[in-house]
Image (spheres, rainbow, N blue to C red):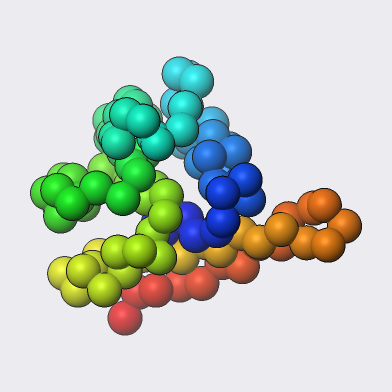
Length: 106
């Protein structure tokens, strides 16, 4: 899943909610300085990454992958990734967030 939006739009907050929904007990933190954080979700792994060039190997591993700043690497995701979602977060004038979810699977 590609998480798209400007700094402060809520990408990490959304990732925390997704991780919670997947049963991750650990507190998910922003991957900005760690580049990648991995969490156990039942029998699968949740990979929370900030634009990371070794991502192809992670995506082929069968776990869940949340990519922050995904818009910067969409062109290199030509390998089959199914399903692939693009979640765009924008700041609305009233201080809230607008969220657009698009199915990127071919």
